[in-house]
Length: 59
Image 1 (cartoon, one colour):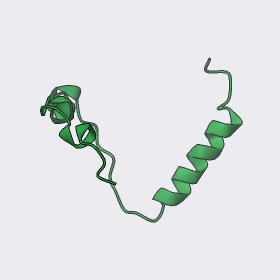
Image 2: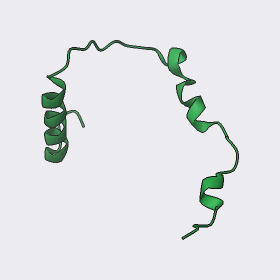
Image 3: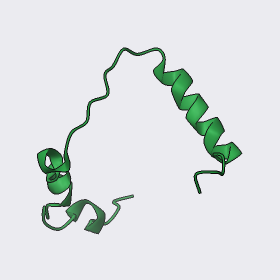
């Protein structure tokens, strides 16, 4: 609800991030989703079996 405030834990977390980000110079720009909609495609590509976890521990 717009009349309710931010919960205390969330407000504290936002304040910590604000303090941390004050040390940087940056610009926030709007980027429509049609420009980055496929950005996480590489993280979802199948790369084959995970053979590292299938091997037996020699020791």
